[in-house]
Length: 69
Image 1 (cartoon, rainbow, N blue to C red):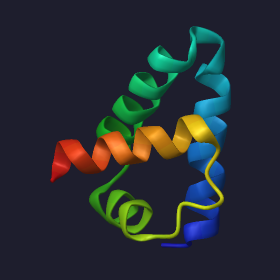
Image 2 (tube, rainbow, N blue to C red):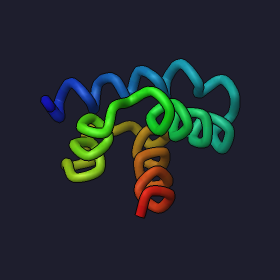
Image 3 (cartoon, rainbow, N blue to C red):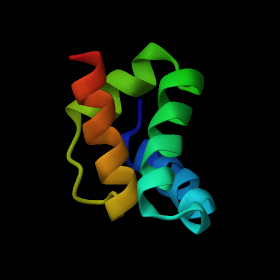
């Protein structure tokens, strides 16, 4: 999976949910990644460099990592 594309997609999801407030946006972004991204996409975003993620997307990925172990 192309990490740059996945980063872009995660940032788009986070931006679309930002109006919900930061905490809710993080939870909803994480839920979207968990529910709709296939295992290869999740593995790639979890293993990749998170420098390009916006703060909400980064927190969501970190929360997903904690959830999945």
